[in-house]
Length: 211
Image (cartoon, rainbow, N blue to C red; front, side, top):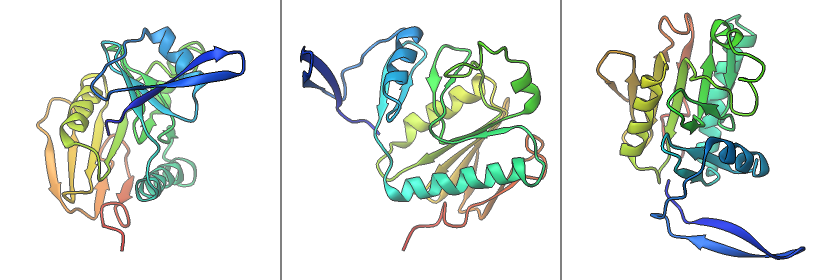
């Protein structure tokens, strides 16, 4: 979703004015500046492209938030209750990808083997790793093409499996390294394949529309 950005500009020690930026105006930040900005604004979902462009994602609506919660719940249950292993993350988690971008997928999972290879420094704030599984959920106001580009970026940076869940068209695009994108029409489940052996994501209440 593309929205106008607001910057707080101090005028006095206790006062500030708001500067509203047009949606098509891009702000460029270094990785270090982005981390500082994200740390100071933890209630916002901020992302940064590989060339330093800042992306401000507004809070999700209740429908998208509920769907995100259902995806994360199933991942966490598989990891902790069913012995799947690895670490599951929700939409508030940021990752610094190898290409320099800082991204926050709607849900993600990192294998224990990959996580254990990271140093303590690499795990600070935005972990320096691309998740093995990334999930992006297209809300009613999201344009499809930017999300597809984002999924390709995850794949190019080391994601072994990616799901783009398109609520509007009731489709799921599956991204795998070295393969064409597979499109499923109105599936009821998604398999974790060899990346998450035994994991099956139920799409009940996720792909289906709320009534």
